[in-house]
Length: 143
Image 1 (cartoon, rainbow, N blue to C red):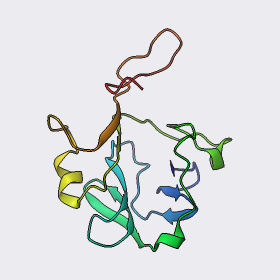
Image 2 (spheres, rainbow, N blue to C red; image 1 turned 180 degrees about the vertical axis):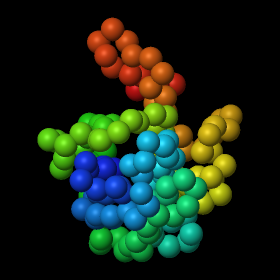
Image 3 (spheres, rainbow, N blue to C red; image 1 turned 90 degrees about the vertical axis):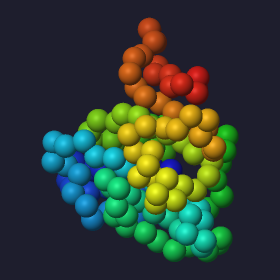
């Protein structure tokens, strides 16, 4: 999974298991934006949804054959991806969460600024508040 804003574009590009989405909403405007990517069945059918600031920026309906197999043993990279090794994320990243469930629109909006206690499906949370001596940032998940 890669979410990227290239320096020459003003919107986001998302790569998920062989599928690519190109966003429309401008995000290079010196303003913080909330970005959420949902892969799964939040609306009862398989979709890939990119949210920017509480609204769906772009969506794609999918079938099971549309996605390449997901490698659960692959490294988790925040700020760059396998297909974009020479191009790091152009901007700042803060408060990254990884869920094992497809979040609904209401859940995405409700958890935009905070996380409920004992959230179901929250697998990792990186707040990037402080780094250890090696420069590695650890979130509340300990990852």
